[in-house]
Amino acid sequence: MLKRKWMQWMAAAIFTVGLPAWAAQTPATLDGVKVVNAAEAQKLQSAGSLLVDTRVAAEYAEKTIKGAKSVPYREKSAKSADFDASQDKFDLSKLPADKGASIVFFCNAGECWKSYKASVAAHGAGYTNLHWLRGGLPEWVAQGLPTQ
Image 1 (cartoon, one colour):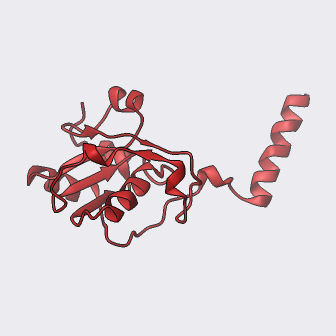
Image 2 (tube, rainbow, N blue to C red):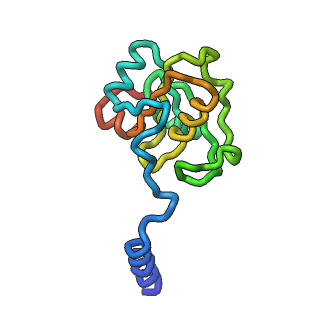
Image 3 (cartoon, rainbow, N blue to C red):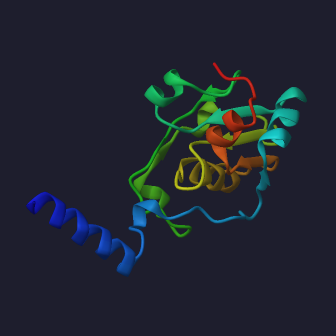
């Protein structure tokens, strides 16, 4: 009985206050980075773009886009557009040395900020041909595109 009351109180609190910050959606756009859908990402990959899975290694091992490279974005910063990148870790040396190389970042879609933050980091490091699959792996899978 107490557990049910607690759950009702939590549901009411979320409804009243809104979703917690950890559930915040990523922005719809990102300066210096082209937002793409799954079909566009697949075309880019077919043309030689590197697809980068920014999720943790365990998620990558479970399922990823076929041919994607794992470059985890280790995030400690807030899930917001004005995040403090100094709190996070992202190994830019795992990206191509050519700053003009075409790269598509992805993670687990809207609430997952890792690919957004990786895109920001790459843009800040001088990469110029960046794409962000905002719908991430869930969109790719929903389209029936190849995974591994």
